[in-house]
Image 1 (cartoon, rainbow, N blue to C red):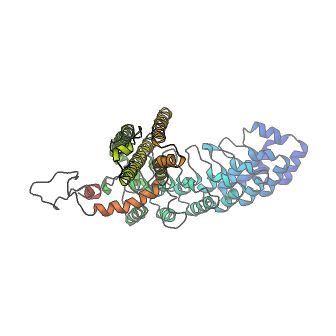
Image 2: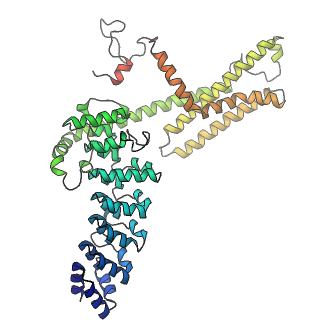
Image 3: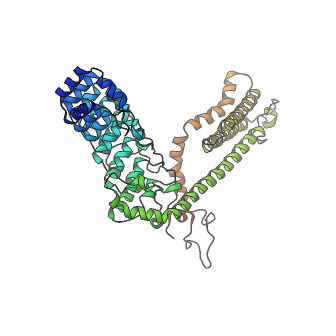
Length: 485
């Protein structure tokens, strides 16, 4: 009887199904228990028999949620086949079927994307918009799978869906190797996807992280470098560069030394990718050792830079803290009320001292807060962050407590005078809140000042060569950063 049922499912014979069920009403239950997840519904979905699927669901709708030993539910099969009608019929049981996880934690949407079944994707996304955020066992999103398998239409649909539901951040999600969809597109020489994400106005320009680092410390610009086989590679690098992409660690190196991704399989497409990527794989194997060394050097370099910044930030915090404990005597407020004896009858001198002290304390407090903020940013990923945060909070509270007590004590007791004495702290906090605006204003001013070359070569990274005079040494600080030696 079971053989007859399987044969009926393969052929889509509804009459045979009804006859067998009428002779044994428990036959479907018995087969479901014995089949280890592989049911008649799976067989009917593989054959594309809509009427048979509909009839089975009437008798036993829970079959729709069964996952067979190969890791496919009936909806997985319909999605991979692109069978819209069967997919819609299955979803009548419930939209929860969109989240059923099969092999490698894949959901039906992942199989539809991988096979480029756009119409089924529309059905699945309309029934379960949040399924676009589901990831596989390799932490791949549907967008990762679309890029890897060269499904450009699927990429467009997924990005539009993310925009519509305010989920653009998913574009920058990383897989188990730390690669974003842009990494995969750049390494796979997929000009169409790179151009769409960065130049096609698919999303706002600041949404896509063009210089995101993967687990090897490589950016999309790094992985687009090798192997170079034609104009398409150059066009991709030009698009990335125009979008503001940099190489790993923020350093620029020559194209010949650029690394490739650590996992070649991540960059390859679906079923027909091997012959087209053989050169890439061989090049990646030949350069894997140098790539590993380069990425390790980048990580060491970033660690050294962070350590240097931490030292500078600690010194600034210490200096500004010490300055408020022992301010210069000429501008220190007189706690004994002898200001008039110190400055005589000259009121202009008195107000001048007050103004200077306001500027001193405001600037000192702003510098102190900025140095503490820098320490917090540089240590945010350290394992002992919480004790350090508590210590910094204690230091800031001590600073403000001492400063407030000093200011209130030096005031004459009136509310207006107290507010005026506390004004420097208020100014410092206000400057901290608008620091991004201040940085934006100061950047062009500093760039304008640097153009005067007032310091000459005093801060050049390289000493003068023999016989070189002013203006003839090519190894200046600016050229040392980006020049070609």
